[in-house]
Image (cartoon, rainbow, N blue to C red; front, side):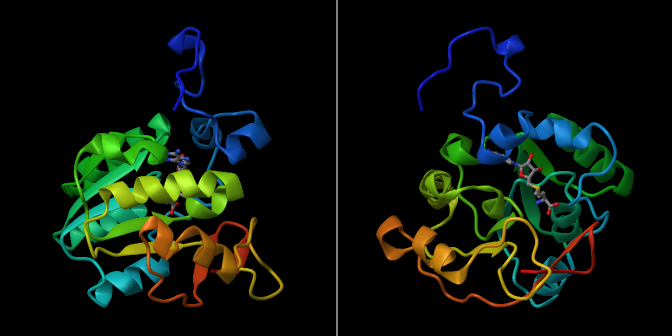
Length: 211
Ligand SMILES: C[S@@+](CC[C@H](N)C(=O)[O-])C[C@H]1O[C@@H](n2cnc3c(N)ncnc32)[C@H](O)[C@@H]1O
């Protein structure tokens, strides 16, 4: 990735290339956590993640990519698993660390760019993406998917919870099954084991949005 020139202190994107969401809003992700709860800040772990955990879906060293204030990561860690949550939003990470302290749950957090996960120099199994993939537009996905592959153990599992285009009240932006199959294909190291319908809770969907 080419280095951006200029003073890091003046760069709200900390020398990252802004993602599509950041280009659209003109603000770094961190700004989502400055004035009141973000639309996706539901205040509890996503029910789909809780169910997955109860079914034994998490074992080993877990990476939560785009962990925000870590309700999902904290839930998984509370089951006794080793969890690293990463995000670019320092405000969210500070809240995550405070929650972990308050609850006495051991979780590791790091400020890290999901496009540069190889810099962690560690591998995980499984990896969780809850609501990050669906914020990326088409040309951003190959770089992110490759980054995920660099930190996922061989034969490890990646769980992606994203908005789907099933049903009338979809979340923005809905992802079609074909988009998942295109992004996570054999040629870039992934095999799609299953695409299953679920729900993502948001602050704007009474019964959750199709996922
Ligand atoms: C829609 S939120 C979902 C957050 C959380 N997983 C949840 O379930 O509530 C997407 C998160 O990904 C983070 N994010 C976006 N781009 C990122 C990047 N390049 N590297 C790391 N985190 C990123 C944002 O800061 C934000 O917290």
